[in-house]
Image (cartoon, rainbow over the protein chains, first blue to last red):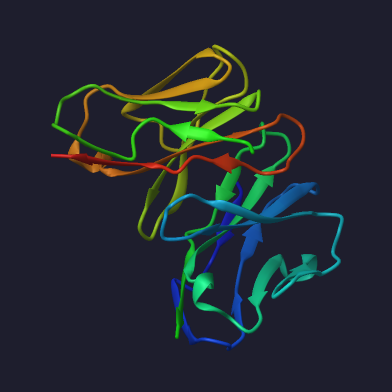
Length: 115
Length: 113
């Protein structure tokens, strides 16, 4: 069975600080996809990134970066120089490539940026 | 833009009522999903459908059913609403075989009293 663990339930940082959101996953598949979604106060989940299991390169997009390490089954998300607009709930998710693309989600991390 | 539209943002229903939650997507996606979101539990899959008239149970299907008569529409049905079904319900869709992830609707917050 697949599982995604986001151990950090809530994080608060002061604006402009860097913050890392942790994600650890479990799967027996050799081919899988990992995702991060952002859920702002409006409620609609917004896709941030997808990573497949064969691509361990880190990714950077502006202030956002992702560190994928298969050896530790982790897919961590770092926000550099955080801003108030980054306040949201962030979900990590894992896709089963043989199961019609069902996503297994973690329980989410609520990030609050204090101005 | 891909759009997934959920018919109601907020709903209040009475215990025992039959409740219909509607979801429509406009991008010809094959796969559609219903999740519920509860604090501390994340998103849990209720049902999904990978084609018209096809449906499969997710992790928590008890007390729910679904209908997919047309490709663009996926309905979630609470046969007899109970207070423990008070939750945020999220619909999502995705194109089959792409693994691009989901496009989500804005959610329906259902309160059963």
